Amino acid sequence: MFTGLIREMAKVVSLNNSLLTLKAKYTPKIGDSIAINGACLTAVKVTKDTFSVEISPESQKILAMENYKNEVHIEPAMMMGDRFEGHIVQGHVDCLGTVSAIKNSGNSTDFFISLPCEYTKFIIPKGSITVDGVSLTVNEVLKDSFRLTIIPHTIKNSLFKNYSIGSKVNLETDMFARYVYNMFKNSNDSKMSWNDVDKIMAAY
Image 1 (cartoon, rainbow, N blue to C red):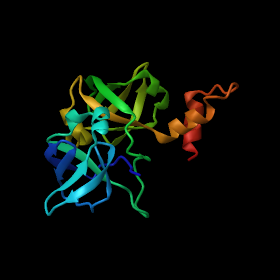
Image 2: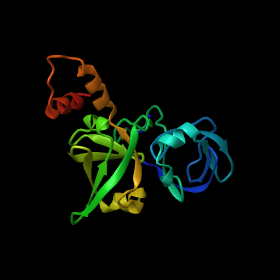
Image 3: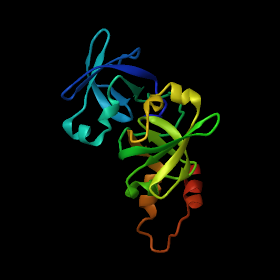
Image 4: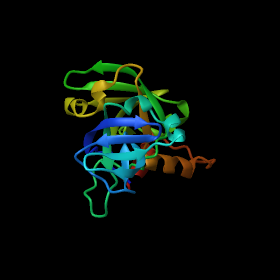
């Protein structure tokens, strides 16, 4: 389990077939789970200066591989007793999103990200979403996209500084939103609003 608060930006040393080698201040142990751009991967090799994780061909078909170069977001899995911030993140990428618009809004920047329509039902206004492993708050949900407002600090210290219109990103929707949807999707007399869902999620 993760929180969506990245530990650092790791440097990509190489990506050979399925082996991604990174250089970072953080050093995992072999077998440790670590989120790389939001995807939970396993450390399979550790050297003095680098560590490697394996990205299977199947995973490479799902992930935004264009962002696995130069530098990547990394977050180690939570340990018992760790301070909990961000939101509960599983490291399971649901789908790819596409940056459809970027608008400066004074002291922040609005990023609009489109995604397959079947996943918009899991996105709630003022709820949480993970974009390339970063826990963010959804400001607005549109028909086939959503809007994020990103502060300069986040842009400067994340891959957001590299995104442009058309950039692909890994998306993981909120776990509780998925659970709530599945709890009520087959109920004939349940007509829940976003406010109803928000109240249920706030109870956790």
